[in-house]
Length: 41
Image: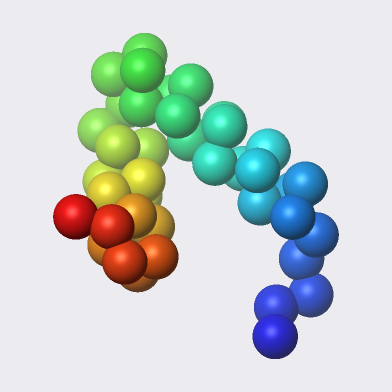
């Protein structure tokens, strides 16, 4: 299991969301990848 706290994951995802909102294409792609890995569409 990953040795990462849920709070850290939340912070990283929030950071990616903020960057994606500002138009960061790489952040958007990472969020899409995370969503697919977690079983989302």
